[in-house]
Image 1 (spheres, rainbow, N blue to C red):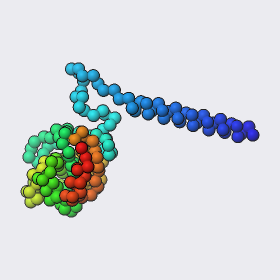
Image 2 (image 1 turned 30 degrees about the horizontal axis):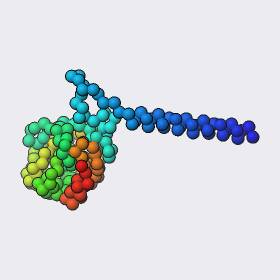
Image 3 (image 1 turned 60 degrees about the vertical axis):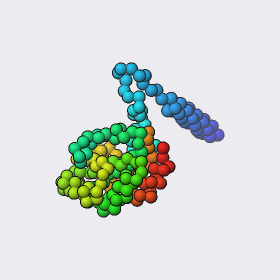
Image 4 (image 1 turned 180 degrees about the vertical axis):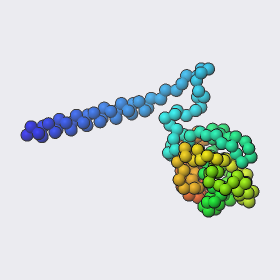
Amino acid sequence: MKIKILISILLIAMISWTIIDHEDSTTNNNVQERPEANEDSVDINEPPSDEVGISQGDFAPDFELETLDGDVKKLSDFRGDKIMLNFWATWCPPCRAEMPDMQQVYEDHDIEILAVNLTETETSIETVDTFVDDFELTFPIMLDKNIEVADKYEIQPVPTSFMIDTEGRIQLIQLGPMNEDMIVQTFAEMN
């Protein structure tokens, strides 16, 4: 009898602690402090660091890469646009298969396509340049020479695409190739 009472008290204490802890964490998560605007503050348009990640609903991590054209571009330069962030390589057959569809979407729809080439895995930058010419690609080709951005986004298979809304949040992560209809439909459902 004493053991049953002791176990009951212990269970009630554990359940109470769990409820209180959950309420505290929910309250803390719902209250987000924004930095006040002053000379020393960061850009108020930057997402809170605790909301940056690579899962659906997270703000996509910012990065800066050189393009095949020699420009330097940041993901955040495209904030306000719907973005297809695509990781690819010239030696990847599914990547080759989806490139014509990506080009068609880029030409026909109000969607920004950023194609991040895993340059470290290529035989040369000339291989990438030839590929882009052969497929007549006009969207920005970003060169991930040290696979730093691919590592940040934990890219395993290529192609992998992150569909990012106008606020910079990841709305869909697609492992494998996409066709034109899939891309257009995904972006039609986003803001």
